[in-house]
Image 1 (cartoon, rainbow, N blue to C red):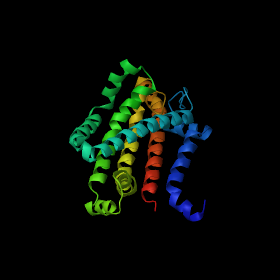
Image 2 (image 1 turned 120 degrees about the horizontal axis):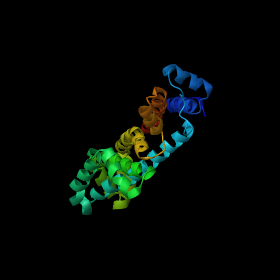
Image 3 (image 1 turned 30 degrees about the vertical axis):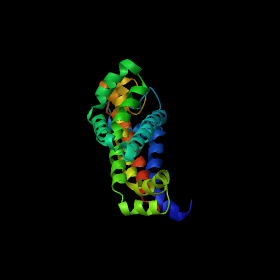
Image 4 (image 1 turned 90 degrees about the vertical axis):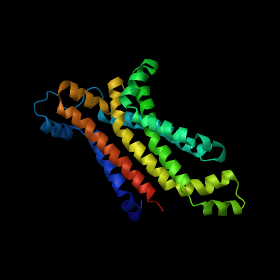
Length: 242
């Protein structure tokens, strides 16, 4: 990596390095946690190592956010086409309802159907992450200058060409901002999955609350915060690219 490239990417790299150092930390990390809660009998979460929990947390968020992007962007594209405009209010309201419905309630309804574990939190994150993606995709596509589309049509571009070569590239910064908000919020919300048996960074937090162990809580909270900062700074870098 060149020096100029390193300068552009140093914020995401710095947050990622700090995240990995803490997730793989050994005795020095244990000593730091012991300082935060000197009365605790055990300060390192014993059920799974932090790096494993981090990777599981990231996997859950990636699956849910990937599905939300596909469904949210796809639905927004469909309802901004001439044949789907009648459904635009319905899609916007459905996405809003998904975020106003509490994730805990989604988990409670999903567990009897999907069982305990990872899938209920994926469903909750999917519903919770749709609104910013749908809203920003609609804003990006609807806010384009009509003259640009007319120029593309005058160049002989068909509907599909205009979408992929003109509309989506121009709307990309607004769409990316919605995805950034959705993913960042879901990183924190995913911790709720530990209440229904999902193994992620929420597990130390829940265990710490139950056992009155501040060190457990700090492990989960700090790593979730660093993961959110890493991903957010990555999106910030991508949005400034070019």
